[in-house]
Image 1 (cartoon, rainbow, N blue to C red):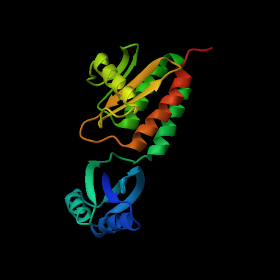
Image 2: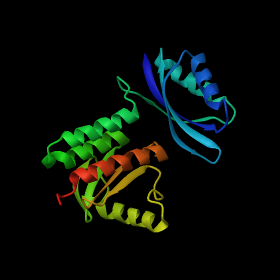
Image 3: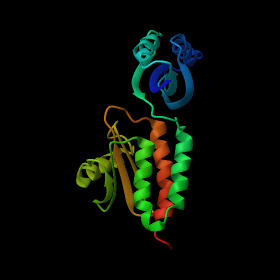
Image 4: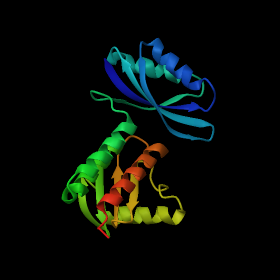
Length: 207
């Protein structure tokens, strides 16, 4: 079986998701999981994990879904072996962080953020200085300016549709992550913010 993750925009109306599932079934696709990433403005953004008997059916599935009135496919990507539910992944990352030796927790947090966001780069910084990173990160000054602008606007995530970030006030850190080609949606940001809250409590200096 060939497993893909499909992000779809659909009208917020009864039966819309059922129509999508029906079209996927018409090309012998099996919907394994569904997650609602964002709701608003009469639209819903869902992420579906779909198993297909043949990779050659992906384009046909996309065309079938696009044929539904008001529905569009944002992104399709191949899923690696053994799909893991995002909520389970979040809990697993938090548990691993809590079980890690305190001296290694910053690096464990960095890796957890990478797994949760599927980002191409991740940085953890303090006072404008990068203390740990993965990938080709932008300058900390650039990211700091971007975050300052979003704080000024009153929306912590207003500056970029392809970047995550969260404050860790107790530990004096902040984390930022970016990925290309896939828009970041509300539920993904909430997931990172909650993971960062757990990490903040674990990384904060003892009182």
